[in-house]
Image 1 (cartoon, one colour):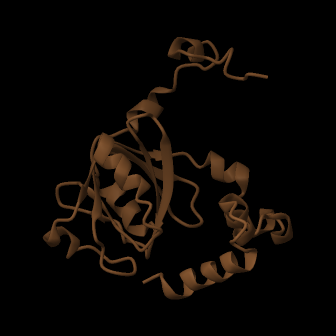
Image 2 (cartoon, rainbow, N blue to C red; image 1 turned 60 degrees about the vertical axis):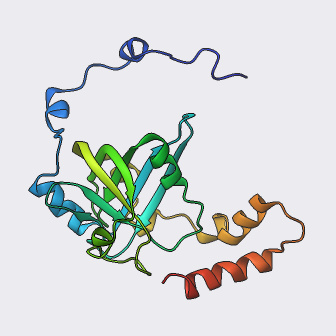
Image 3 (cartoon, helix red, strand yellow; image 1 turned 135 degrees about the horizontal axis):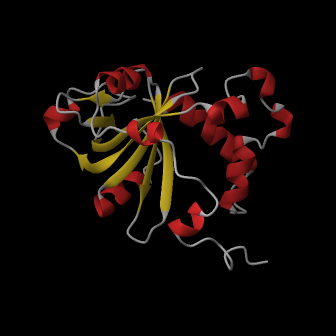
Length: 209
């Protein structure tokens, strides 16, 4: 079954199904980081970064640290420091190609999120990196975002999912083990599950900083 064969291909087609948004949904969008948005970012210990390459292939990655690890400069630029990772640099490769990102900031226990979309670049300017809160080692680069869309997103998804309610969390036995998932995707017969498990343990124990 080819589910793309009869897919909706235009905004007009979508509007045959969906009504126009309420005026308040449009009005809540601003084009810069005001005081409320700055306060939200200061309380957020995690942000999801969405980017796309020149061929339209998308990527979303989480970035985390202590609350306030993302900085908002005086000019309104949002700056996300680099952190120790797997060196795939998917986000940075996309940004240098297209110069755009989308961000979603979360605060634990809170349903509303903050969405920030805008122009982006990757900076290695020493004076910028020196003023950032490091996440592990001092950052090699930073993601700089100049917002053109900023708005709070409603909490319905968190209410429906019960994300912050431990009673709704699935039994750990029903979840794929992180090492098993990675091992299955590697597909290399010379790499054992035990090797993957040990690597993940060492990564969290020795390479967060």
